[in-house]
Image 1 (cartoon, rainbow, N blue to C red):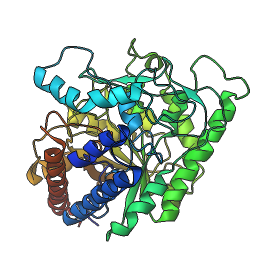
Image 2 (cartoon, helix red, strand yellow):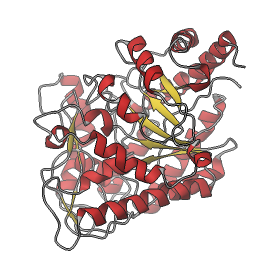
Image 3 (cartoon, rainbow, N blue to C red):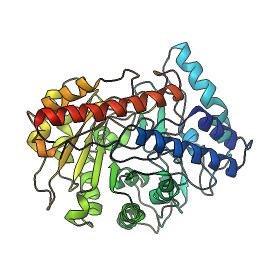
Length: 433
């Protein structure tokens, strides 16, 4: 069997869909009109991905506001822009104009409270926010990610329980599945990310942290099982907070709390509810962020993450590497830390061979060379190929290095196509056909 390959999940939303999200927030179009355009974008994503020859496809998360917080009925994207802000440090005039043109009105809509769910207030800090669950939350200075270009995303804080998802990933999967001829995968958010909804150094009256974490684990398990029951052949868990957890950014208090081992243990509480056979098809994705063609934690050395990450009893890992400065060092670290027996399942490392944050299209030959080099350090039966990250994890992303979301979308499919060609070439060279 040739080297396995799959994408992470998201694709850039077309310009027409991002414009529709703006119009929906400003009450210029109805929810029904927005859904039609989401359907159109999802179908186009699947059709074009199938045309690349990909062995499995996604809908590019065209219905979701972000990879962190799933799309809520009646609030299709408003929370994304509620959490987005213009760069806080000086930026080039062209970049600021792009940001202003896309974000300004929606930030204003959010500040007016347009579409906010009951129990939400738009006065918080930075990561991503939305109506994820049937709980009351307030936006306070708590959990945030600050990207290298200065823009920020925020998380809310729980003020009462119980914690319940409002929308599950499998619900969006079911809407897109009829468009697909190929098998489909689905990405979900890690419980470790959602654990940051609870205060770091405080408790909630009537809702202990232990009770919250118990509810959280139940909901995450339900989300994953629901995807498989709906027909997903693979489910990958987005764990971008893993590398960020070691950044120790004084502007971002939770990153200095040494939470990485806590994150690993929590994620294993979910994974250990699945059999080894089921976990073969449950993956973990890690990267240093990927939003508006920027990152948040690339300076954190992989040696601080990998020994912890492979403690998770997942069957495979989607690992950002194409944009890494010293790839061979990381290949070697993967080979030294990946497990052949993770509680009954052999782990596979899908190394990133294309970079979604740049319009430069990697050639099949370059991708092949990366895989052949990686095979010197990683066993061939534990080697796979992927993209560094989703191509646009957030619904409003103008892709400034690309010039437009539509151009970035075209580039994404070219990159996917070349990844498949490079994988075929490497498989032949390595004799794993």
